[in-house]
Length: 260
Image (cartoon, rainbow, N blue to C red; front, side, top):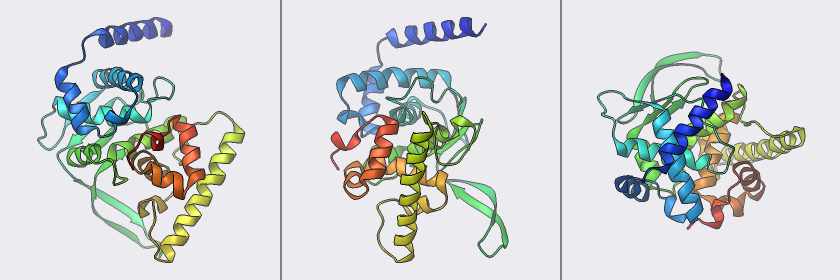
């Protein structure tokens, strides 16, 4: 049954990708995915196909009155698919549902501070990624992140990096890797980079990564992913080992095509 299901899925995907790519979607790619024009033609072609499959196979739901549209789907799908462009097929197959709010949304939050005090109250969010659950996004932030590729912030990159982290069922800031040597290299480089980030923050020094990366290992990976794709040349210059690590993982060299 599994083989039959895979055959039908692949047949459906081939049929979908054989159809002409909509002109309006092409316009949206160039308008809302700033990275797209920097890709090689073969990468652009693959992203178009990946995007069509991604849109067709997810359940999309607008929240708080947001009406789902081609622009929302194409923008979010394009940015998500960039992360998996050179990775093995099916990296986001486990994501079944994408919930999109018009802007920031508020959820109840409970946290324990460094003093041990439990604090509860509303928390405004740009996005969330749930293990074996949906990805939740703010449309205004997703649009801004897609159109501005130079500020190091992209909520779609961030939340789908979390989904890559979750592929092995453990949310620890390290996506599934090929072997123990790669895992050790990942831990060595990311821990050193996190230590340097904490040191700079304690001394009030400007940092390449958004300070939110200091929250924990999983947020470090998500924030570093944003920076890798959006401030690639700066990362390659200032943190070459971290850049090399992410380049090896994503199998991409955005600094080689980036304008910044």
